[in-house]
Length: 143
Image (cartoon, rainbow, N blue to C red):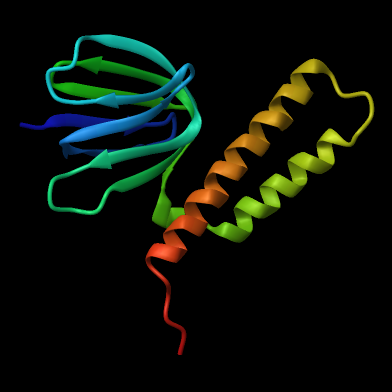
Protein backbone atom coordinates (compact mmCIF):
# COMPACT_ATOMS: atom_id res chain seq x y z
CA UNK A 1 0.00 0.00 0.00
CA UNK A 2 1.30 3.46 -0.86
CA UNK A 3 0.42 7.10 -0.37
CA UNK A 4 0.56 9.88 -2.97
CA UNK A 5 3.12 12.61 -2.14
CA UNK A 6 3.06 16.03 -3.78
CA UNK A 7 5.69 18.62 -2.84
CA UNK A 8 4.98 22.05 -4.29
CA UNK A 9 6.30 25.57 -3.96
CA UNK A 10 4.93 28.77 -5.42
CA UNK A 11 7.35 28.35 -8.33
CA UNK A 12 7.01 24.67 -9.24
CA UNK A 13 5.96 21.12 -8.58
CA UNK A 14 9.06 19.64 -6.91
CA UNK A 15 7.91 16.03 -6.62
CA UNK A 16 4.82 13.93 -7.27
CA UNK A 17 4.74 10.14 -6.89
CA UNK A 18 3.49 7.28 -4.77
CA UNK A 19 5.64 6.49 -1.72
CA UNK A 20 5.45 4.09 1.21
CA UNK A 21 6.22 6.62 3.96
CA UNK A 22 6.86 10.33 4.44
CA UNK A 23 9.05 11.67 7.25
CA UNK A 24 8.63 15.44 7.61
CA UNK A 25 10.06 18.17 9.87
CA UNK A 26 6.94 19.36 11.68
CA UNK A 27 7.12 22.60 13.62
CA UNK A 28 6.57 20.60 16.83
CA UNK A 29 8.79 17.65 15.90
CA UNK A 30 9.38 15.01 13.25
CA UNK A 31 6.26 13.41 11.73
CA UNK A 32 6.08 9.96 10.17
CA UNK A 33 3.17 9.51 7.76
CA UNK A 34 2.01 6.12 6.49
CA UNK A 35 -0.90 5.23 4.18
CA UNK A 36 -4.33 5.55 5.84
CA UNK A 37 -3.04 8.19 8.29
CA UNK A 38 -5.69 10.29 10.01
CA UNK A 39 -6.35 13.65 8.34
CA UNK A 40 -3.95 16.33 9.55
CA UNK A 41 -2.95 19.89 8.72
CA UNK A 42 0.32 21.07 10.24
CA UNK A 43 3.04 23.64 9.79
CA UNK A 44 6.53 22.54 8.77
CA UNK A 45 9.90 23.73 10.00
CA UNK A 46 13.03 23.99 7.89
CA UNK A 47 14.56 20.55 7.63
CA UNK A 48 14.91 17.34 5.69
CA UNK A 49 11.83 15.64 4.30
CA UNK A 50 12.27 11.95 3.42
CA UNK A 51 10.15 9.97 0.99
CA UNK A 52 10.58 6.22 1.41
CA UNK A 53 9.84 3.70 -1.32
CA UNK A 54 10.29 -0.01 -0.69
CA UNK A 55 13.41 -1.39 -2.37
CA UNK A 56 14.78 2.07 -3.24
CA UNK A 57 17.02 4.63 -1.57
CA UNK A 58 15.21 7.30 0.44
CA UNK A 59 14.53 10.49 -1.48
CA UNK A 60 15.68 13.57 0.46
CA UNK A 61 14.35 17.08 0.09
CA UNK A 62 15.44 20.31 1.78
CA UNK A 63 12.27 22.03 2.99
CA UNK A 64 12.30 25.68 4.02
CA UNK A 65 9.14 25.62 6.11
CA UNK A 66 5.55 25.59 4.94
CA UNK A 67 2.48 23.45 5.51
CA UNK A 68 1.53 19.81 5.09
CA UNK A 69 -1.95 18.42 4.55
CA UNK A 70 -2.40 14.70 5.19
CA UNK A 71 -5.33 12.65 3.94
CA UNK A 72 -5.56 8.84 4.23
CA UNK A 73 -4.33 8.40 0.64
CA UNK A 74 -2.43 11.66 -0.05
CA UNK A 75 0.16 14.01 1.46
CA UNK A 76 0.47 17.52 0.05
CA UNK A 77 3.42 19.66 1.11
CA UNK A 78 3.18 23.37 0.31
CA UNK A 79 6.71 24.51 1.05
CA UNK A 80 8.13 28.02 1.25
CA UNK A 81 11.19 26.51 -0.47
CA UNK A 82 11.97 22.94 -1.48
CA UNK A 83 14.59 21.15 -3.53
CA UNK A 84 15.83 17.62 -4.01
CA UNK A 85 19.11 16.79 -2.31
CA UNK A 86 20.80 16.20 -5.68
CA UNK A 87 19.81 19.72 -6.84
CA UNK A 88 21.62 21.45 -3.98
CA UNK A 89 24.82 23.31 -4.78
CA UNK A 90 26.95 23.22 -1.61
CA UNK A 91 28.87 26.39 -2.51
CA UNK A 92 25.67 28.35 -3.13
CA UNK A 93 24.28 27.13 0.20
CA UNK A 94 27.45 28.25 2.00
CA UNK A 95 27.30 31.64 0.26
CA UNK A 96 23.66 32.06 1.33
CA UNK A 97 24.58 31.24 4.93
CA UNK A 98 27.49 33.70 4.86
CA UNK A 99 25.31 36.50 3.43
CA UNK A 100 22.67 35.93 6.10
CA UNK A 101 25.27 35.84 8.88
CA UNK A 102 26.77 39.11 7.61
CA UNK A 103 23.31 40.66 7.55
CA UNK A 104 22.82 39.66 11.20
CA UNK A 105 25.96 41.62 12.08
CA UNK A 106 24.39 44.79 10.66
CA UNK A 107 23.13 47.36 13.09
CA UNK A 108 19.61 48.71 13.09
CA UNK A 109 17.85 45.63 11.73
CA UNK A 110 14.11 45.53 12.16
CA UNK A 111 12.55 42.50 13.83
CA UNK A 112 11.29 41.38 10.42
CA UNK A 113 14.77 41.64 8.87
CA UNK A 114 16.24 39.77 11.82
CA UNK A 115 13.67 36.96 11.49
CA UNK A 116 14.29 36.69 7.74
CA UNK A 117 18.06 36.48 8.22
CA UNK A 118 17.69 33.78 10.89
CA UNK A 119 15.32 31.80 8.63
CA UNK A 120 17.80 32.12 5.76
CA UNK A 121 20.55 30.70 7.98
CA UNK A 122 18.34 27.76 8.98
CA UNK A 123 17.49 27.03 5.32
CA UNK A 124 21.14 27.29 4.28
CA UNK A 125 22.29 24.94 7.05
CA UNK A 126 19.65 22.36 6.07
CA UNK A 127 20.77 22.60 2.44
CA UNK A 128 24.46 22.31 3.41
CA UNK A 129 23.82 19.28 5.61
CA UNK A 130 21.85 17.51 2.88
CA UNK A 131 24.46 18.29 0.22
CA UNK A 132 27.26 17.01 2.45
CA UNK A 133 25.26 13.90 3.39
CA UNK A 134 24.59 13.17 -0.27
CA UNK A 135 28.24 13.67 -1.27
CA UNK A 136 29.30 11.12 1.35
CA UNK A 137 26.71 8.65 0.10
CA UNK A 138 27.30 9.27 -3.63
CA UNK A 139 30.86 10.60 -4.10
CA UNK A 140 31.55 12.05 -7.52
CA UNK A 141 34.48 10.69 -9.46
CA UNK A 142 36.71 13.29 -11.04
CA UNK A 143 38.90 12.57 -14.06
